[in-house]
Image (cartoon, rainbow, N blue to C red):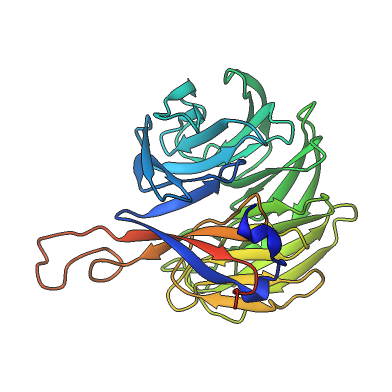
Length: 357
């Protein structure tokens, strides 16, 4: 029996239990439905699969651009991955040497930003900079439906646990709900506080960077940043909005830490706790909110994190954390400036229970 099965979920006890190091920046990570593997990708055209027990790493080759997002099917054997060149691959993730089972070339024009798999694992949703959401058959990658209605880049997508609705969030803080069976837009959730465009800005800042439903589908969390002070380094306040799915009413969740980044990922734990991972100089943290509370009850400060996933046992979460190697954020060496060393990643597994005595 897994040791964590004897523990009680308590996010206030969150602590780093295992770290998997890699020499390049990884910005996306997911844990397989079987709980054995962790797959991550980022600023290179490769995926990396770690066995969480042995820490053995296997590289999956097939993409030609940086990895944009990852998604496993529910309880199955397939992994889906997307890149900044608009390509989607489907993999049998547990194979000794995984190869793409099928591929969608030019699924989107340019960057794909987000993936989501339907609760029944029959559909894959993709979204990107071309402002479309598209639905694909997970059997062979055939296009099922295209959803049009966003005016800005789409950063996030999520299926409602009931399977009949899909939500997508964009640069301007608009969250649209779609009827999966017809593609009809049903309603809009207002997350415009996650978008800023000052009079002196050269670009829009913000957007709905992450979306997540709780287990029952009663609450929808949207994450990003509010009150950006400029469009250079984007200092502001990491924030999330919690929507009641039935009524659409919203609760603003804020943090005290100042940052030049976003809450990049949110996930609900089994007890209703919301976890959010942020990035930024001096303000990066992993935050935890109890249901109904606007202020986090626990904060784990650390390096910038770009994603967050919950292990199937419900007692662990994984985060790809920035690991500075060079001089400054660009990896430049202080003494030999003609040489460049890429910054790395520490994919960190946090345990969410009291440490055994």
